[in-house]
Structure formats: C-alpha cells, structure tokens
Image (tube, rainbow, N blue to C red; front, side, top):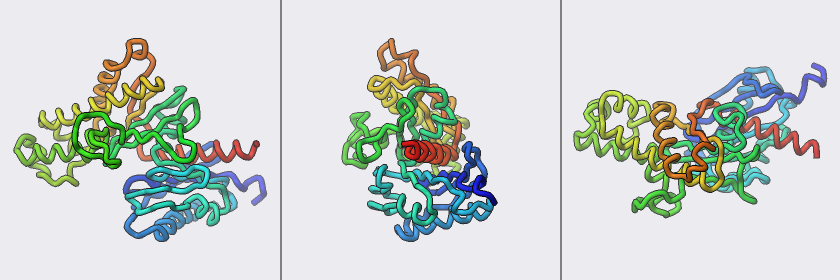
Length: 331
C-alpha cells in the first residue's frame, strides 16, 4: 500500500451513558463501521481504558485498517473534561477521577487524540450533520438519567478556560427542595430528567393513578423507560402525560433563560425521552420558551428534535478532532 493510502481515517468514540460506541470514519467523515459495548464502569480505570483500546482495535481489525492509517481520535467522555491535557476530571458512572485518557490513546495508537465532554460531542455532531446544521449557534439539551447540555457558538464549542462547561442540568429552575448533584435544590435535572419523571410515575402507579403503567411494570423505577412512558400516555394515563408536560415546562423555562443569555438560533432536544415522543416534547418546550422571552426574540430561534440519535456523539467527536488537529497542523 502506497503512502497516499495511509493516515486517512478518523475514530469517533462515545463513552457516555451505560454503553460505549466506537465509529470509524473516512476522510470525508462518512461512516465506515461501528462497534458498541457496555462500559462496565465498576471494573476500574485500568480495565476501562483497556476496554476502550480493545474496542478500537477490534473495529480496526474488522475494517482492515492499521494504526498508521489513523489520522486522529476524538473521544467524548462524561463529566467535566480538561481539553488541552485530555483529562477527565470526574466521571461518576465510570468511577474515574483525573484520568488522562488522551495521552493513553495517543500512546497506544500513535495519533493525536482530542478529548471532549460527551454532550459537547453530541451537540457538535448535530451542529455539523444533524438538527443544528446551517445554524450560527446551536444549544443542545439532552434529558436522560440526568440532563446534559452543550453549546456550539459560531462554530466553536463553548468551554471554560480549562474545563468543559454548559452543565445545564445543574442550573436552578424551580423552588423545589430536592437537592441536585451540586447541593443546589430545584435544578433542571432534579425536576425534569427521566429519572425524576420516573420517580413521579412510580408514585402514580403505586396510588393507582396510572392504570396502564401499574399493570405493565408496577412501581419498579428502573423499568419506567422512555418507550413505556410514551406508551402509557398513548393508552390514556392522563396523569403520566401531566408529569411529562410539567417536565417539558421546566425545560422550556431553561431554554428561555438560554435564549435571553445568548440568543442561539437553534435549540436541539435529544435523548431517549425525546426520541420516544418528539412531537409532543418539542412542541411543548418551544411553546413555553417563546412565551417567556421578549417578543423581539421569539422569531429568532427554533426548537428541534435531534436527528442523529446514538451516532451524534461519535460524529461530533470525530468532526471536532478533525477540526482541531487540522487547524493545529496549519499553525
């Protein structure tokens, strides 16, 4: 194989949630192949890093790509990330603290590695190839077990001087006394995450106020997943619908706050709950947000459902790595 055939592939890796996803892209960032595995965060740092390495190696073997054909790796990781050093400050679900995943992967694969927050990667993916495409500024809000947020402002991922930012889920949004992860009560995550919603629905099932939910899964919190919630509403559980609408209102207030702060032209909502009932959630969030900003802002933004699903973070991680590595090479 000649030198012109080498150094031309990109890896996008998503380490968020309970699953890891590794995707191989060609020079134009077209998807070549993909592998998914469980994260197994309880295995510790060393085992976790080895699992990432082996996942990349198996994908390369499947696609008959060698290490020296890799131009760069982008990896989205949960929690605050130190961009320049490629260090994950803390990732609770992985049991990680101050883990230098960037230098580990650079050493193992002999190519530059760019580390970013997983939600930032997902929002950037939507910005370049999904629901945020064509916008000047895209804000992403992704309700899940928690609520992640990210912002691409005029083509750049919004970040702090050292670490990632846009922890939208931890901003105060209500007068509730339920404490969030930072100790602050009434945060968006405590009021509108899927876990918060499921907790309210378990109470409804226990009291017999959600007949379908009660009959299908009872009060088991872990079983109240996004698809079950959507089905429950479709089957007539009006109190379940109310809980979802209340959560949408909270997200709508958060969107209004962000519009008043930075006036992004695109708000992208993603995650399993949005995927399960996109029309209901997008419509409600957009309505509430537009009702609570100045009139001059109401036509300046739109709320959309994410398009890329599970691929958003790998697309974004690879695209951001390509951007950063290419720009560095030109300086």
